[in-house]
Image 1 (cartoon, rainbow, N blue to C red):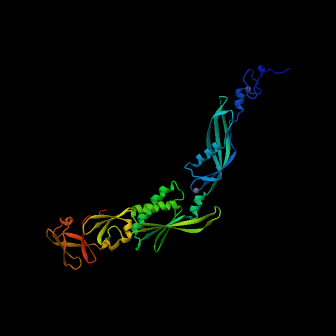
Image 2 (cartoon, helix red, strand yellow):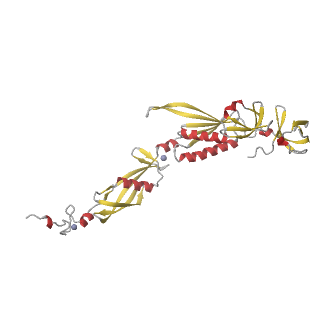
Image 3 (cartoon, protein in one colour):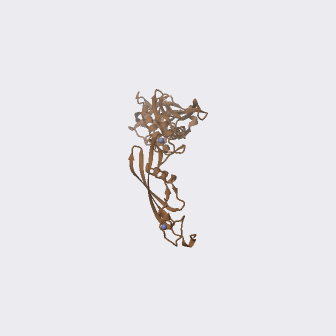
Length: 360
Ligand SMILES: [Zn+2]
Ligand SMILES: [Zn+2]
């Protein structure tokens, strides 16, 4: 005699007159469902230096903790059962022996709308190695050299400190997006300082930032270093020369036969004060090669006003004490007999330097 469909019963618990799923009632079916298939072991490869993670054939940067990365990988490699729904995984490391991390996974979900809980343990092998970027960094790899120089003069320690500060600040910012934005070497040589950077792009941004803030001249020259056979490309390294101007703020330069005091320098212009007219003149860097240094700021001397008329002012030469008569510019109309004034001698001529002109 055949068993009729209306007399079907659960093959597991024997319950009759219930809807069957593969021969089982819903609760027997649910209790036998494994909810999700989780691999029993897996390997996660991290960079020990920067915690990027090796996925497939690529290294990906990660802002996540190792635990988060492992949890994500477990979720990615687990396969939910086709009858299971609303699965939530709770992932906890329970022990670690050497590089093997044992992880407990608690899974909750529903099967045929009945709640189901399962627990799994798996072994995660933590493979700590070095990503290509970090290994380049560690080996001193560089793409560009920034050569800091003074134009026709040595660098001074204040400038070097400013440059170091600008480089450090910019690297910090650039490194967030470009892990090759590192300084691998700083070498002091007779001519100046060479900075070796992992990334050419970063070196270039830094040289532009230096010029913006300090003024100066940038040049670039690539050098062929060989050939990368693995990708069939020529390997270039770029030398970026960054020259600071031959004058400093506070020095005196000539421009079109005028004598000017350099009152500010930045990437866009050189600002001078003409010592004959007292006009401020903004010079573009295109005019740089026409400029000439005629006196250093430290050559400024102090002397005394000895007489004054509505149109003339008389001072003593700071070294020979000979009286010198100069036209009284409106800028100096407040000066009185007995006042101390700063002067500079350029090409045998004495110029008065307006007070407070070089306020920082
Ligand atoms: Zn049953
Ligand atoms: Zn790394």
